[in-house]
Figure 1 (cartoon, rainbow, N blue to C red):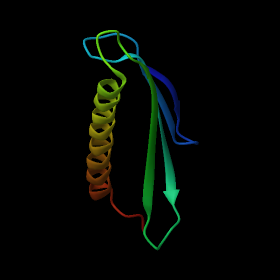
Figure 2 (cartoon, rainbow, N blue to C red; figure 1 turned 90 degrees about the vertical axis):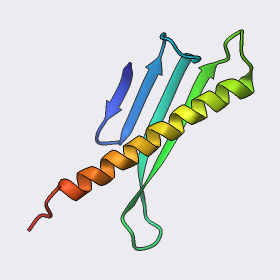
Figure 3 (cartoon, rainbow, N blue to C red; figure 1 turned 120 degrees about the vertical axis):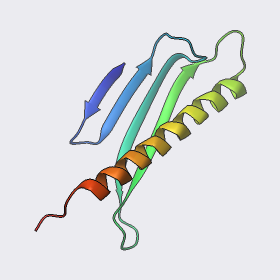
Length: 92
């Protein structure tokens, strides 16, 4: 579920409250920041999360699973963004 989506502040907050996965009460916040270091136009993506550790798991396994999910999401976001930038014609 998307809890918050703010295009102006470049913030997205999502929750996973149920489903067939190992995360209980998972909430993730993703923010985008312009990288002002150097001369390249890059964006820094920061994602943080909170999650309850299920009774049949441990903190380390839960964090590893969430980190894997985050890594996949950020990788997918990068691929989609790169594809979009190749398809958008430059303004005259």
